[in-house]
Every structure is written in C-alpha cells, then in structure tokens.
Image (cartoon, rainbow, N blue to C red; front, side, top):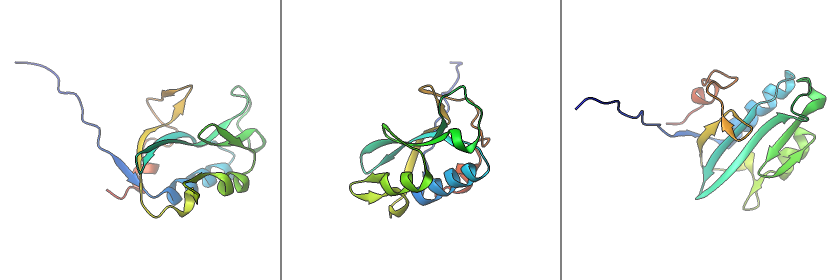
Length: 125
C-alpha cells in the first residue's frame, strides 16, 4: 500500500560532437571532464578525460583522454583515434544515449563536476 516508487531514469540523448566540445572546453581550463558511459547503435562505450596518476594535481599536463580502454595524451590524438565503426566520435551523425556520467573508479559519482546540467543543456530530448 505504501511504498516508494523507484525514480525512473530518463535517457539523455546528445550529439557526440557536443560531448567532445565539453571535454575540450574543460581541458582548456585545466580541468578533466571525468568519464561518461554511453550507448550507440547497440554498443556501450566509455569516453572522457581523467587525471593520471589519480592523485596528481589537476592541470593540463596530467590530463589524459580516454576512449574505451585506450588513453591519449593530447586532445588531437584522442579526437583522431576515438572511433566507432571507423567513424570519428565527433563525426557521428546520430545522437548517443548517456547512461552514466561522472564515473570515477568504476562508480558513478552522486554529483558530477558540472552539476548534472552541462550535458542536460545540450540534450536533444
């Protein structure tokens, strides 16, 4: 009779180019974007940037860019090599579905560094 209804999580659809723009914007201000998990055409992917080593100071020279299990030292290298089916992430024509954001140590952070609004502002639906 009484109970709490589990909050339904609505999907967040966004163009991959917008995600790449956010990652670059953060990098230009010496911040890492953290990580997102997204779905695209039936596949699950991990994308973002992080500090390596994890206990290092957050500044440009310590930020690495991540796609799946690969890490890249420069944004240009990341942008050129982050591909799905031979198509670069920033050139994908269909939106991606964000599943988790702000992933650190395999756990989703309760509050993301961008206050859960930066991705949502770019959402398509």
